[in-house]
Image (tube, rainbow, N blue to C red; front, side):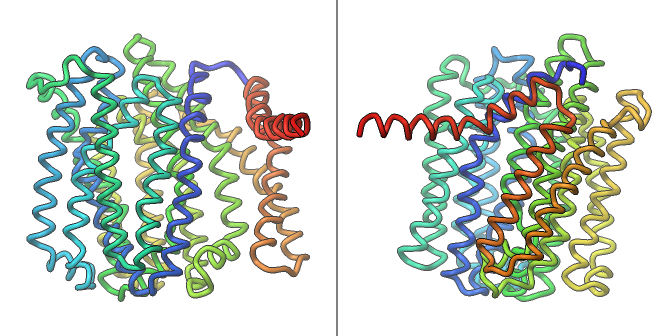
Length: 504
């Protein structure tokens, strides 16, 4: 495989991803504990509250934080001014939204078909205000190429986030305790941001009206696109919440489980890809952007395709193990939802943002939103809870095809060159082959869920690893890096064991 200008993507992205592995583990621990403490009705209420939080967190950012990936690489001298402008705007928006949630709490509760949410909604507003202002912490670190620090911050933040949620629930066993813990975590994270900026951006940490207008001119269309995107992404959840009770919503929400590792892998790769692309564009080397896009797609597929295959393989055991047999009805929904994650391999939005195609992002997301809004009731009537997933996947496929067509015009290439088709085919074939021995073992063994999950998962991972090393679409340096990365924990364990024997 030829060397590409994207050589800088793999290592920084892996550093960022490794820092979020702890968050991946903790994010799974949280619902495991909550479903065992809360009733299904209470768990559904918790999911509804944080559905509102996650929706507003994206909408209220208005593109101010994410657009720093566009401005800081080309104007790093004004980092402090850009960041202060963003914090100021987000703080004002956060206050307005927190107040709005309080005044309209009963209308929000009616929208969710659960009046119990009204008594908790003010905590969500306070938590949202704090998290809005703190959202740019790792963004600034990544733009400064402090990948190791960003990785450590991701890990420590995810750890404290989980502790602030879980410990109060264990001690007091109610939703009020969890929300108070959430507010405490928000205060902590915002304090860390202020400390970091005090040390990194002492000069120029002030409002700059000229830069603010420039920032808003890019961020508002991008934020509008993000608002439309999050509405269409969450629309199916609001529809199910509106038409069904909280307990049924809990079942559906588990089926549409967001795998944190998927988001971490995709986000880390996209962030590094966009920074590298902007640098090439600024250097007048726009043709290299296509090579970066192809390479990022291939490398993301190396992780995502087998990950999705593994989740499908162990889905029944995983859902029952994590959420108890009370949520067994979520298994088919989870498998269908997980299959749709294959679309995350195509980081089309990142490329469009690099070329400031924010208006096209708005159009693309409007297409998705219209398709979901128009057809979701028919899909729900025809296919029940499955229909909400099916209409969302249908809209996402259409939107992704539209985005790829736009990228084809930007790069001025044919469909055969736009994507690394051969590499994607090989990765998919290797993933399917790796699943065969795991499926055979799963069919033969008659044991309980946990050991069956471990054995089949281990067989699948090891088979994929060896097939990837032998036949995977990677150059020799990448294979060497992969081998070193996987051997590192074993070598350290061996060194620790040897040192322990010497001391004994």
